[in-house]
Amino acid sequence: MNPREITSRENPEVKRYVQLAGSRRERRQSGLFVTEGLKMVYEAFAAGCGPVALFVTEDAWDRYEPLEKLAFQFERFFRISQPVADKLAQSVSPQGVFGVFRMLDNRTQTVKIGKDGRYILLSSMQDPGNIGTILRTSAAFGVDGVFLSADCPDLYSPKVLRATMGGVFKIPLEVSDDLAGVIDRLREAGIRVCAAAFGEQAVPLGEADLGAGCAVVIGNEGNGLPEGLIERCDQSVMIPMRPDSESLNAAMAAGIFLWEMCGRS
Image (cartoon, rainbow, N blue to C red):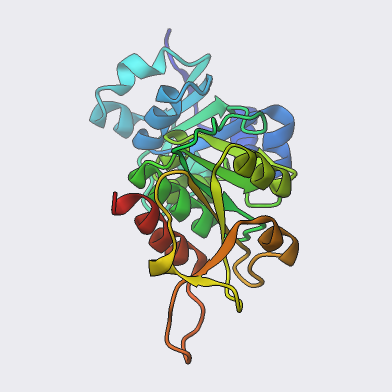
């Protein structure tokens, strides 16, 4: 299959890519998402996301020899000019490799709950960078699953994908409209569920049992967790800090909990 040439920034395929990159609604309605860079294209392909379209500059084609085999796995393959690549690029240092893939279905129950598993739940978080960093850290520590409330940033947004560095494709993920129901499912399976929250009954992190068979729920960057979710958990756990300290960044806090859950065992 010979690549089709695209030199116009107004080409319909180029416009479609830009639409998908910029709109959660377009991604959800079409079931498609975009990736940028050789690593992310490979990660999406290896994860089983259906390859739809690949855009490659001449320079990238000459530089990245493995692209020759990968390109023919896509339904459509385009050789693009540098001005077109500049329009597609979302990153600061683009490599000239861009892909369109079919989404995995993260709204089905894709996280298997086991009695010795370790899980993270993210409630109503707002910052794509925080979501991406938490997913990347979760993948590094090898958690058994991450649950996200449906109002968290889109897993397939370019900002989240860049921040995960491929982590979004390496761990089981589940997006839920009912995080309280997820907590109930975990507890019914014998998993201890801990709310990352301050309060009179909160246990200092070093005194909590966060080993096998545990889940931690982390809340919104500004408002933390709603009382309804905290009350559903087995206990609240706090990270001890100086009284005059500001609260930690959500991704930093999650990293500390993940270390306690996975790094010590």
